[in-house]
Amino acid sequence: MTRIPLHQIESPQVLQDMNLQELEALCEEMRQALIEKVFQTGGHLGSNLGVVELLVGLHSVFDFKRDRLVFDVSHQCYPHKMLTGRYAEFGGLRQTGGISGFCNRAESEYDLLTAGHAGTAISFGHGIAEGLRGSSRDGEDPWVVSFVGDSGFASGVSFEGLTQAADAKARQIVVLNDNEWSIAKSVGALARYLSRIRSSRTLNKVYERLHSLTTKIPRLGQRMDEIGEVIRHVLVPGHVFEELGVNYIGPLDGHDLELVIDSIERAKRLDGPILLHFLTEKGKGYAPAANDPERAHGVKPPTKVPSPANVAARAAAPERKSFTALFSRELLRIAGQDDRVHAITAGMPSGTGLTKFAEQFPERFHDVGIAEQHGVALAGGLATAGKRPVAAIYSTFLQRGFDQVFQEVVLQGERVVFAMDRGGLVGQDGPTHHGVFDLAYLRALPGVVLASPRDEIDLARMLDAGVVGSTSWALRWPRANAHPCLGPEPEFRPELTPGTAERLRSGSDGCVFALGVMVEPALEAAELLAEEGIQLEVWDARFCKPLDVGALAAAGRRHQWMATVEEHALAGGFGSAVTEALADLGLACRVSRHGVPDLFVDHMSSRDEQLVFCGLDPQSLAKAWREMTVHSTPAGISAD
Image (cartoon, rainbow, N blue to C red):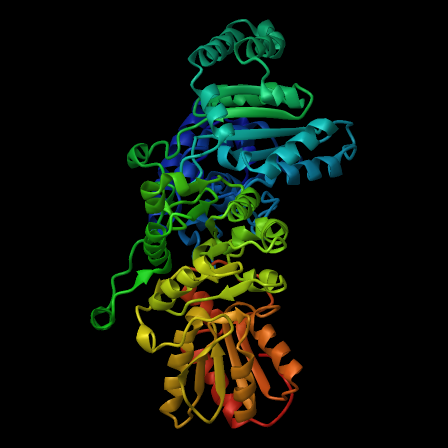
């Protein structure tokens, strides 16, 4: 058949009618399209360029309407989306109203899991395999393919799934995409083990030779698996995967499409589960990636040309640094003064601001890979040994280690600082990455201090206080730049004692308590209303736990209504804590809560758009408080 151009592919089933040369040409077209499209919208580039042949091979061998394909993390699913009829939508990749940068059930029947976290694809796939066992009318159960990267594969939950799948003899294939990177360089003993397999030139040559022989001697293909098993045990004694009861095939060149297809076909002849180990190059086909795979991981969308008015406004405004960069700077300062300070990251030294810490204090730096549970328990152990651990983990990923926060840290009364970056809405990454549940899942734990800085100054002060504190602290900040100094200079601010708020503005028409970066839009909204003669009292709560109950009680008696503002889910967050406190005080002050509504906020082009969607921008807040002031009556508690 004549090869169908990429933009005309509506179903991956057309791949099954293409010959090898046509499929290879399709791979090249896809690779060029990825570079072009991702540089237009921003997104994950390196990981997707590295898996083109693997996904073309899988879709040419399997019918994933009958069989099933589950992605781990799924930031490497762009080729899959192109092959499943979504090429025309790539102009809106990660944009408001456009397709997601991850697999999304709402987009396609080929996306089985709305994914975004690592290590889960094997367990989820095993569940599907067990659920489909015995369901086929022809007596042959569907195959389930779990597509996993080497860093996600090293996650503990991956091994939990793999051992269970092996025990159940599941009809499951695990495709291991091994490029030695997640975002940063893969770490840990398993990474070294995979690297040792990768570097075994003898083993690779034997596989390549056997593959070439099968094309010349068809009957040899029937014995290929037996021969490969013998060779593996000779060259890699006690192979860990075989010991688990998993059929292992590899390592194989993941960019040799003929070999990829042949290996998948061979895997289907075995009894599951099967681990197909492919070696790939992150950023394949994009020259700059060869020199810096980490930077090629993600591409930012092109910068829009600002208007002259915006340029003038930015020039007049004070320079802002990202909260991540400020955390990096302040932690270096603290660690230079106190050699008990250790830093922990879960495979994201750059994203959490720990790269410079790792360079300056390598003996006190711990990258645990994508293993947040281990990282948190490690922090508890370090604290028990007299250290001052700082666990820098994105809010959404700390959810994965919640039990260890409870068991190995808080229950033990240990002192750990949790530095939760991306605490809030995250724009293009969407619902799997929003950090909008941390206050709710940490607030119930006794003794934990929950704090959030409004600006650069308080980030430094809170980090200082947390490191020397007598209990565990959790600090949260958003994916945003910090105001250098919002309000009084440091010497005029009240001491950062847990449970003390700071009043920033006086007023008699209503009262606002805002947390963290929401203090700035709250102040701006108050200024807008002041132009209309409405004067609001504005507080920086500073702490979600413990609350400044005294300030709340006094404000509740002075005002007929109170508002709370947070970049967090309304359910169980800061506003909930305030209403609980007011109820305990017996105050009937009306409360208007402003935060993230009870739904999963879709990805949008920017965090700012999401803030507007949630009513957390100054104009939306001013409108709500104007109505509260006009209709203010001493009523009960309400939630907006």
